[in-house]
Image (cartoon, rainbow, N blue to C red; front, side):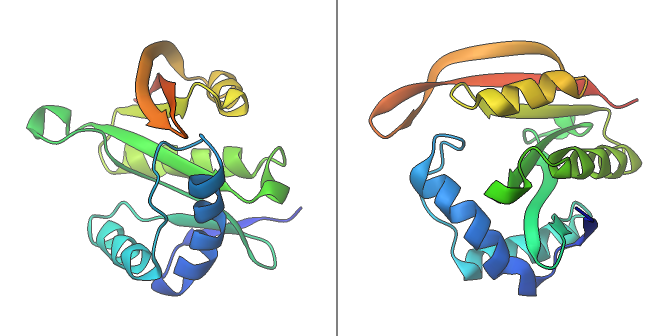
Length: 164
């Protein structure tokens, strides 16, 4: 599968929502319960471009995934720590698309001055836990029952990777 990466534009919001909203609606991959509106996604795409932390889309003949990074926490003490997000269409999972997005995220975060990349993963997302271990993330910390979705308490697994 030939996949290219590029910066997301506001015109990509619909394709991104088509990937993200079923994950929000139907899974515990994210603890988020409110689906993304096109207006909110367009605004987020613009804001991330302004911050020089853009969403990247992975595409073949259409968008099959996207990813990016943002500040891990507020405040000057966390300026060099960012958290990444990657979401894939079902047909892109296990095809190396996530790894390609992660590599781009790492390069962009490092170029922007980040030295630590955080990955937060639902305890029910075994493939993402394995993905982080395969890609050099260390020190998994489990925060038990910090999330709630579908009436269940969910664990959050935190991973980190040094970029410098």
